[in-house]
Image (cartoon, rainbow, N blue to C red):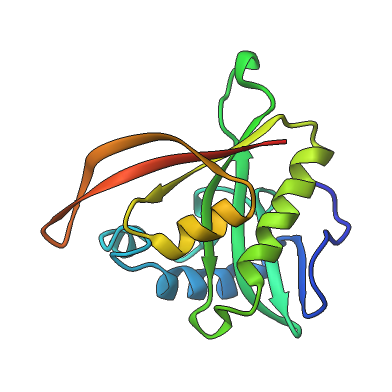
Length: 169
């Protein structure tokens, strides 16, 4: 990913993460996920560094009026040449206080721009079937349902289906 700022709206700016973003991103990660959006047990796996699983270069970060308020992890989906050109969003989170301000939309727009810059043909993602706000957001940005995995997860005593969504570039 390049270092230049990516397209965004007037209050939200999106850029590539840097090591210095680690603490702020970890704080977002610790507060953003719940049973509706992710996996409650995920909190138990968090370490002391946000970048432990993947480095800053895999993350687009959003700032709202100068404060870091969200991220999108954009990675190659496949490690082999036949899958080249397919990217995947392996996480998108927005700080509670910055929701409904256009942060997630700015991150998705920036992911599309980054996908074009990298010559990708497709961006895919997974979402819980019960996460209606996220599904609606993805659909507004051109993502379509590609597959359903019924009863994929058991969360808080309820079986949840996983949805595969994607956008062709």
